[in-house]
Length: 375
Image (cartoon, rainbow, N blue to C red; front, top):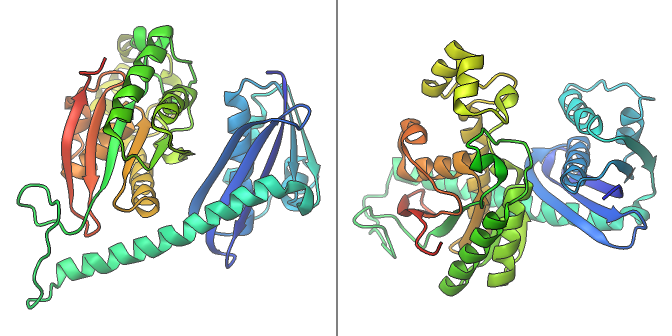
């Protein structure tokens, strides 16, 4: 893959209001769609959503291995700022513009072109679908907040209605069941190296693991959707599942693996030798980031956001979530309501399956951890 075309858009219903973005990657001839991205981002402005669309499109192009990118957007602001003709002044735009520039630096050539909205209809449609999701997510989050108030100040005359509740917890309603699938093997996992934002493909064994997991999930049936991290190893695993269970795939950036920064690609021993004091403290302090990377507390914050979005988008349904070690451990941690020690004590095998359930009233349970029987 040498050259691609990225079209991106974003919008907000209220400016600021429920916002979302869409991005599509076309082949060089603008004939075939190579990748699509859309995501609700909560309450934001049009410009923030447009920048997020650009970032998603560039990230998708990078995953495809493109070296030359033509970016086409109907946002004059973003095009002019990214072309260097306009200065980025708004505080909310500065980090987004820098994020986009870092992605641009990874290609050989990137050109920006303004196009009329009518010529950006594909990305515009994806952005509108994301904004539809954003409205739903906002409504469900408000409902969750109301439920929290009810739990804090319950009506003593109300009788609890328990349906499919885990054990004797008293959780109400039917849960959204998350089938948490770790991606298959890559070369970095064979060598036991920190593998965060790097993008190694699945090995032959990794593809076989994904196929076996997909077959197992298909036998379970009744799966509404597959939600995945944007990284290639997760996408490959998710695509295998999608073919078997015949369910749509949605990419959520919040499910991406931890950014290990300067430790990316190093073994545990190599990282410990490189930064002995920092590495030791990092292993026991979830607020401490890897050098140039992120902390486990930051991971927890974005994974919690992804969890809430999944529950909002797929209430009372079964959803396959394809991700990585840290996000899956974090989802299990959230379901169990335990502290960060779980991150250091729980083992998850490649292509393993765990199951966590989240109830409408805020209850949660874990039904399965690290199943590999199908491999």
